[in-house]
View (cartoon, rainbow, N blue to C red):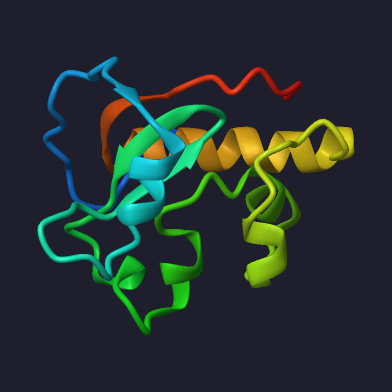
Length: 130
């Protein structure tokens, strides 16, 4: 009897391989991030998670009028941790109030994004407690 089981899939691996550029550590201001919401011509579409900024421009789901545009131009840590698409949740970058389970979900989203989208920088620290 031979073992025909497939090797376990790596968690959150994309269905199709993604060629990512080396991560950048450029400092991105919150004001610039806000302009990167998919609605301003000449600006990329960006989403920040836990201070790391991802370029999601190539994914239609983040375009204006699409399901995930609510995250574009923001750092929606609270919303991602709670699996919420509510606009009011997407404006909350502070995730210190999340439960341990919600923080795990946020970490999973970070892993998901890091395997699919280029890291283009880090958010400029505003001194808030995350």
